[in-house]
Image (cartoon, rainbow, N blue to C red; front, side, top):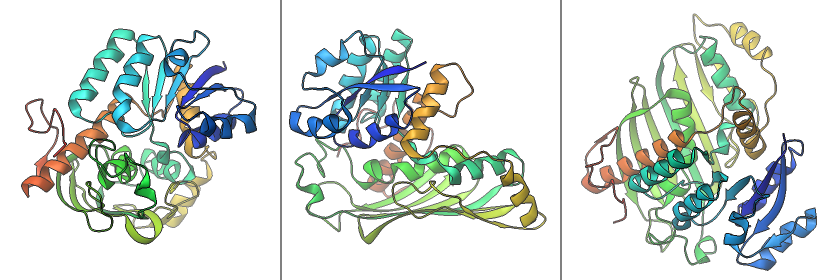
Length: 351
């Protein structure tokens, strides 16, 4: 079945478009909507896709099946709810919404309409992460002992020249919310929920309101101990995940925006042998990467097939982690998860 998509927001929406175009038998992008008509036209005209500037007209178009929201974070909740109430399936860029209270308000809209909201976490999709999941499923990983995460990116004043970036009002958070959120999602997708986090945050690189550096100590629910280093002041852009399991040590690729795009490095640890790992990986089919893989999983879910699609619960879990990290940083104490509705930052993590 081919579903008709409207992309709302032509910034990161340009990369979404490439993902949809890689799946012509499953999706057709019918329009690209942006208040900046020339920006929408710049990517639409090259692919023969009409553009619009009226969001309400797009959301209420009866020929649109899916509204793909690529807007600034402070617009996500209202746009998601409007699209759901118009009978559309929703895809929404990270962060899904900007507080746990908003997440639960959106959950109510999902339940009331019976429709789906798919949060965007495309880093999960690609050969590397598929290999890790495959080896875990085959029983070759065992317990995870410890690990390290790195989100070491470069963001300068030019990046923050867009007026809503780097502000609590517009971006709703800094490097924890807008940058490291992807690698933290990969961590929980592989190892399960976080039990406790201690975080330190700082603004050291740019003249902005939000944090651009962070150091986190994380205890997973299964006992694994993880450290996460985050900065927007690196000389280059690197994302890296390294996990030490009973059966092997794994290191991801280092590509900042697609660390799973290629095979990962697995080093066996006795009694697991390198041959055991190689034999298991030889049976794994090559998956699609990035947005194409992410959208293909959504199509499978909508078709009622077995799917690795990112769920609404995944999106809420990522926000719960961010909330706990901000609480920890401001109180200089560890934050335990899950958080309850009476948590001090449930309504908002804004300072």
